[in-house]
Amino acid sequence: MAGADCPGFFVRNRRLAYISRRMQDTNIYTYLTPIALFFVLLEVGGCILYKRDYLSFPEAIANFGTALGNQTVNVLVAAGVYVVYGYLWDNFRLFTIELNWWTFILLLIGLDFIFYWVHRWGHAINIMWAAHSPHHSAEEMNFMVALRASVTQRFCSFLFFWPLALIGFQPLHIYMMSGIHLFIAFLHHTEFIGKLGWLEKYFTTPSHHRVHHGVNLPYLDKNFGEFLIIWDKIFGSFAEEKEKVVYGIYDHPRSWNPVRINFHFFIVLWRYAVETPRIWDKIRVWFMPAGWRPPGVEPKEMVEITEENQIKFRPPMFANSRSYLIVQLTVGVILMLAVISNLFGWNTSQRWIGAVLLWWHIINWSGILEAKPWLWASENLRVLVTAGALISMNALYQPSAALGALLAVTAYSILWTNLYFRPAGPKFVPA
Image 1: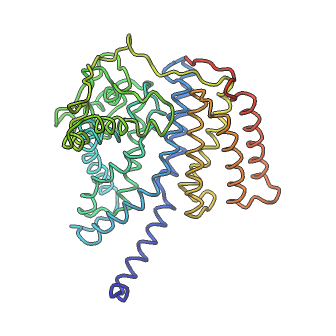
Image 2: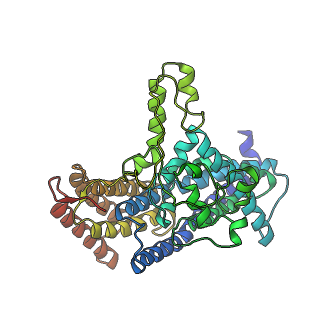
Image 3: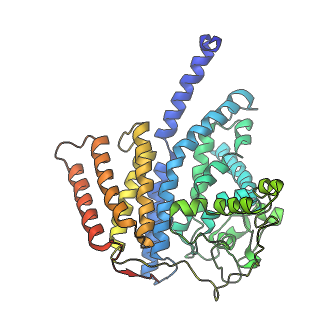
């Protein structure tokens, strides 16, 4: 254990512990979440006020649930970023760059340039499309679609930002900037804002990003920039918004379940790998251009999705579920903040428990939205287990406002589930 006798060993490990705590204490998503929620509510209000119909309830809830679950990976990503990027920064950096106004801009531009290529590869390579496609599987365009990110996309992106650490940007700053960059991208996901004049020349705008989400053939694989559109203009991937954009993907998961949404195309690729007879094809199918099918897999003709022939995913859902899901959405946001921040002062084990409860929570939302027969038993059990876990982990053993609120939500949830979510309960098909 000669390394343990070296003073540098203890310095590095103390710094690792310090930065890891700091990453959790200053988790950028803790601060961005309420801002994002404000914009979501602003857009919902605008849709009601101006009678815009581009936001549907079931897809909005599915988007929100997927977003809440995916936030649970951010602490893991942060830890991985520091361990890997921290090693590169400690041992191989060319410069030591402190963050000020102009290095902030340089870091944003550098991250945006790398992300342009990561984003472009995410549409060009099967396994990277599997990671990115959950975001594109939304069939609408609104701020809640921006929240429909992918668990694997977060890990995938950070496989490529390491050159910034070699240049000299600190791992914590790279991680925080990625959150700011993601929030900039969040603001592009709306139909409320038209074209923005001279800004369209240099910056990615909602108009540019609507094109990016289009399945119209002229729009496929265009406008990958998240902050600057100049990368697309330089590298030949730019398209202007002209015809009405149709949203979605050509191999839709046909589900509101966040697990299915996140891993749908991985399952598709696995099926291709099983069906194709040659070993080489079983391996290369993961790394071939997106859409490539190996020999032995039935070819599929690509028919353009248009406004006229698009059949959006709208399965029957349990009746009387909207108000219930809005209440549970609020509970889900609180549970998510407890996992990714120090809202309740949970330790690591408690955060893991909270993450499992949160995923159970949002999976059950999909059961309500698709009127699944298993939902009734699962939701009754989930409500009771969650209440018990929250009482135990927060030591709510004495009468208090927090305990009262928890018991009230628990009682309401049990009552509503047994009134309306039994397998034979009433259902309806949403518009």
